[in-house]
Length: 229
Image (tube, rainbow, N blue to C red; front, top):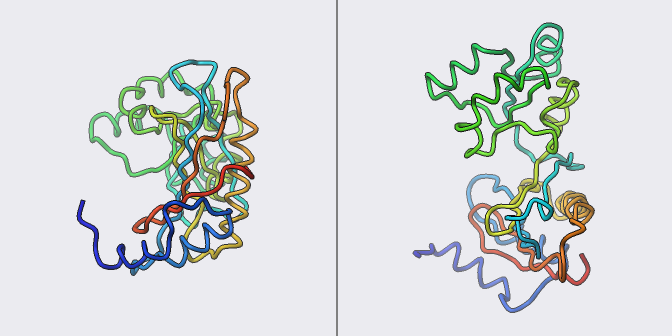
C-alpha cells in the first residue's frame, strides 16, 4: 500500500512495539494528524468473544461527554403527535410510508441514523434488506426503537454513538475530532470503554479486551495498553 510523505513522517513519532497509556496514545494521535481538515479520531477494540454466538454479542449506545464533533442527520419513523415531537427535537426527516417508498424507489440515503417508534416497526421492517447491511436498521438495544422518539433525537444530536461488533469481533467507533485535544478525547474514550466493559457478556471467557488501537482518519495507528482498561 502506498503511503505519502506526511504519513511516513507521522509514523516516526510512534513506536509500533509499544503499548501506550491512553493520554500518551491520544497525544500521539493528535500530533500525527497532519491533514488539512479536522480529522476524526477512531477507536478499534478487539474483544475476546465470538460474535457468531447470540450470548456473546456486545452492542449498545452511549452519549459521549463531548459529542463526536459531527452533526448527524436523523430520520424518524413516527406518526401523529410523535412525528411533530421528533421534528421539534431536531429530526432532519420524519414521516411514515412515504419515506419507506422514497428509500426503496429512489435509493435515498441522505441520513446517518434511523429512529422509529415501536408502532412503526411493521413498515420499517420492510426496509431490513436495505438498512441492515448499512448498519442503519433501528434496534431497541441501540435505543433507536423507542416510544420517546424526541429524546432519542436529542441524544443523537448531542453525540450519542452506537457500538457493535463486526464479523471479526472488533468494535470501530469515532470518539471525536483532533481539534478536541487530548483531554476531551480522553473523556470520550473513557466513557466509551466503560460502556464496552460493562457490556461484557457472561458467556465471554478469558481475556475480554484483546487489543485497542487509536488512529485519526489519515494518521497511523497507536496501540493502547489494555492492562489498565
